[in-house]
Length: 120
Image (tube, rainbow, N blue to C red; front, side):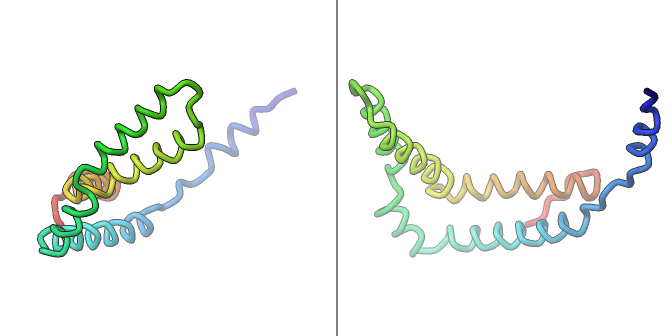
């Protein structure tokens, strides 16, 4: 059976233009970075960080290691602690979060323009 016609169909597909979605996401990411920069400099964030986030990652890591070392560790508790740790690592340090969004912004701009444009 000759399936060569299948290759022709694939070659004729036109690439999908993702530019509008990328531009929309670019705008969102710039606004997020600006907001995080503004929030990170406030007294309120400093207070919240001090009482809620300082030491949280270390505390969760310790709990996770303690549970994992037990004879017959509770898999539900391990999963819960792992999820909390991932969340804390991402959101407890606004500077790391800003860096992640800056990387995303750089990648979006590379896709849109083929080069990096630092802004935001």
